[in-house]
Length: 199
Length: 372
Image (cartoon, rainbow over all chains, first blue to last red; front, side, top):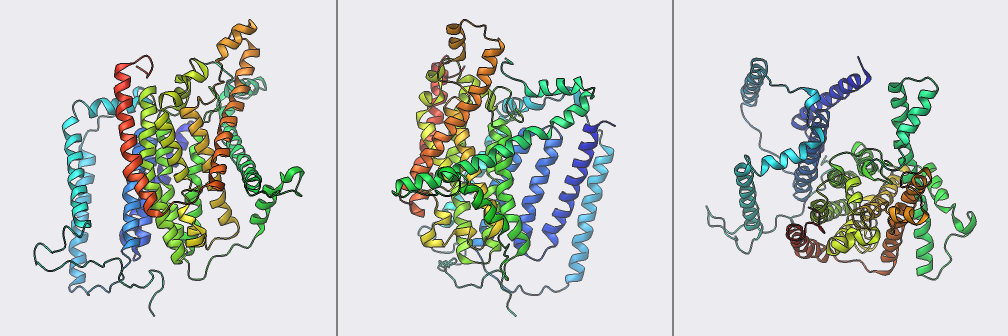
């Protein structure tokens, strides 16, 4: 076994371990801030997997979009809306957990089934385009994937306009469904610091 | 295309002379450029810290550091040693894991970005195809580290500083990336080596600064904002926030922030010189010098001259820009947060978009001047 292959296997196992443990941490940890930071770690490790697959442009785009934009915004939102509320206890928690676990396991088995039954068209590793992939992605985005690309951008524009309308309270100062004036002081409300636990 | 020194090739040849197989030679070679660049970055920081102290002293009619070595050149080393042996304090109610991880997350992406900084045709760690895009992607990780340390300090000044830092770096990343995109459009490549080669045809006249004056100014403003230098040092505005996200930090963890911000400043200066000031190129093209001296272009004298002048020119251009940044820091007042966001979103963003559109139009109209 050559040194390059050994390095690849070591990198792959470390990255997969980080992804699995991190993703479990995101859903299982009680502290939402930890979950958000771990999510960033998971995104970074996925970018590492792309790098291992010789897709450096996709890896950099993954870091830029998911870590640099999505995850920062999630953390930003958590830190700005720093409200600590006691959630109402949920009844039938046990049966709910049982149902959600079984649904997740079914989905997992479906994915494993697809993975095993599908014949993956692996390309010859010597023929991989590697550094040329940036050009190839650009060509595809402006030819056969033009419509999905443009539709996605229109979707983002709609989301942006919606967010601006919601944020500008002088435009939307009444709740549409109830007709009551909207709570305008979300940020100014007094609140306990996140880290100090009330004993 | 392969002019200039190829250190890896010569190094491997020497090792082969000792009877070492080429694969092992490659493994011995791998850590060397990384170590070299790390040392270069740290030495660069020491020089910048000394320059900062001396220039700020001159701007305020003081003498500045004087006793540690000649002209106080050892002062930054003394500073570093002091920070190294100081007690490492973690506040009692702080979140110790995130508190420790924050500075690391701030420093590591900055150092990783040195991967793509070329000092000559073959004098860079890795000529990756995505080149300058790698730097843009890596610099977007930094705000997470800042938010993390701001939050983990359990201090309202720190949290505010971290939030400001993240807001600032998100808003200035977009015009920065757009002005880089205009340069990439002219080069037809993301690689930093290609970007410099594209500017090397006619010496100083072919530098991108003449073809991208608006992009140059936008990039410089955004780079200063990303480095949190005055006039944009709101995240650590002393009068308002004590020291922003670094308020609770001491000892080596504070030193990591300090190191990170200075390495980032040097990196930004290097990238400005690569993108707009011809990188390692001498103001007069080497071909003309070779013709005047009557030497063939691939003679060893000219090759040695090209390699050494390349490193000197890159460092010289970068330090001229660092000097400019230091002068700006000690002569300009700080902007307010609303002015900062207005400048970023309402002025720089539209202008950089217009600049990109103009570059694309000019490229179609005059392909010989703007890259075909």
